[in-house]
Image 1 (cartoon, one colour):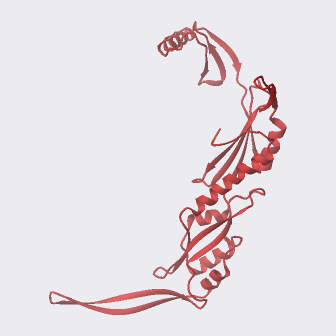
Image 2 (cartoon, rainbow, N blue to C red; image 1 turned 30 degrees about the vertical axis):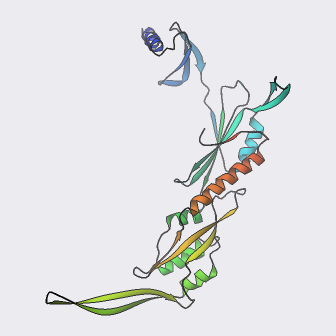
Image 3 (cartoon, helix red, strand yellow; image 1 turned 90 degrees about the horizontal axis):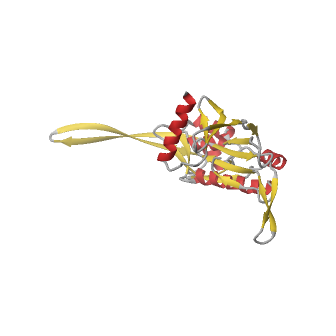
Length: 278
């Protein structure tokens, strides 16, 4: 009874949508792996159970390339126009960039054979390095914490020695000055406090150039220059490194471009590489 009702509903919907006399595959929510084919006459025909994809996780770009070489079949296709043959790979690589989440995902989707109902899905996920994430946060810190941050968190980022010396020898100064005002016969006495930061190492550097690695992958080990403004705050007695606008985004994009270039170099010639999510 239920099958007949579904067939009737499908027939009415197909006719209303102009899809009559065509075959359509249906998947029921109760069992998404079970597939049915509904003909133009409204009759159901089972297509059998769908075989779930095999999911894999790897840790390096080179693992993606090796998996593609082993499991992606290259099929020779004849080109009748120029009497030649071309290769069609039963697989593709997708580069998914998520700057907001600080992650780069490389997906490989491949089949062992042309008519295989099962696909292998391989994911390689990179999380941005600690130094890159620290620059994104750009936290203001007290002098002891900032000095420790430079020595520990940013130790491999090419921090100039001039900045290290300046932070180590910093002194905070407050100067008070009394001011008086008279308005409509009333007098008030105020106190102005001028704060400043000084160091025996000379004037404070305005611009700091750091060298940061975006992702911890042996192939993507190139470093990217990031210009930062050094911001001492005498009032709150804090120090801060703030990346200039667009500096981190440019470094991120350059690393994604490098990942695409390296994949094309490692994969078989002609293997399709796309940007986005499969």
